[in-house]
Image 1 (cartoon, rainbow, N blue to C red):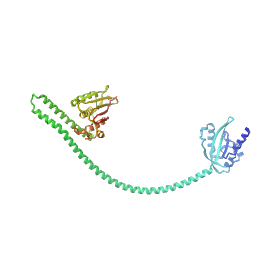
Image 2 (cartoon, rainbow, N blue to C red):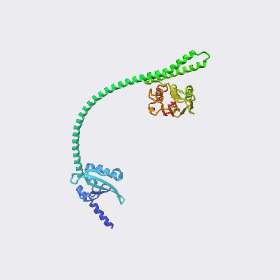
Image 3 (tube, one colour):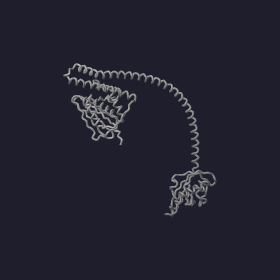
Image 4 (spheres, helix red, strand yellow):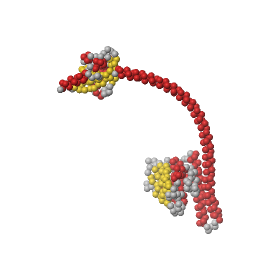
Length: 412
């Protein structure tokens, strides 16, 4: 049975359409099949004992032998799992395009290699013809492309000339339009500013004049009334002074003439001073519930600007909240100092919230109350100038909460 199988394998080997050579570790051919004759022109008996590289040009023998011996020592030396294309020599001396694959195996403790050799001359000739046709086609495409590019360039130049002309006209038109809009906006701002200034100054000045007139009429035994009206005058003068400070702050913001003066100070102490001063502005029954941070180190900031920021937000909370309502002030400390000021006031209508930090903007539900509409604009600009941020949440008729975060800027 085994003899039959062996004979069958011999027949299968000898009739394989692909050329097969078996070589030893010295690259000597020990077995060849019939297909080699058609491929290389050698008879089988002519190849036995010859070097594997007999069908390669002599200048390549040395380098190929070196690779072959290295492959025997370490099969991973060359990636022979993929076919390699080489230029071979037919027995008659003509060149033949060959595809070579090697496969290492062991038999009776000895290493051998199977060399699969195929004549790929026809395939290479077809590939060459395809490449020639491809080159011709590419040349035609290049010629047409060059021709089209020339046309496109000419059209593009014409189009560019037209675009330049159109852009010049558009720029001139836009410049004129912007100039007119800027002039109109400046005129509107001037009108709005004069209206606000006139309104905001008229009311306290009227109060000052009235109180001064009444004081002049009082006799010495009306000391309590005098004290009352002197207090009114002081309050009105402070209000006017705050308005002037806001206008001056606007000017400095617009000109960029802002120079912060940083110093180290105790934040909790500053908060207490602000709240004590603000208590005199509380309406009947209003109260400020202050929750300081438990561990609040000194911070390095512009103390005056921080005071203006917090006082402005706290004043708004009092101004827009009804009598007998609480105002909650909470301070926490982590990476930033966070100041949270909440009230139960009229709130900010949702439609107005996107504009609340815009200059001269006032919500639709505060037209009956005094105000310039510049306070929060200045507050936001100063907070950002100090490296902080401001947020708020509000619901109409339920109240507003402002959250201010300021960096502590503590040198460690």
